[in-house]
Length: 83
Image (cartoon, rainbow, N blue to C red):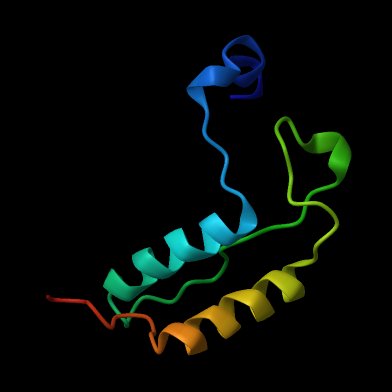
């Protein structure tokens, strides 16, 4: 996929962190609450990044932003499940 990105970067869309959090929340609201989400972000050394990154932000910081946004929106996993 890295080769494809280098050859045709116009075919790829990268989320900024706030966009990703909003996207994932919309997904999570529709996800069956019985499904366990084990990971929604990961850390990678900069030398392995092919595209733009989110800077030096750690997983725990992303999780804190995500949980804060869930609280602000008064939402949770499965809120819209079966609607």
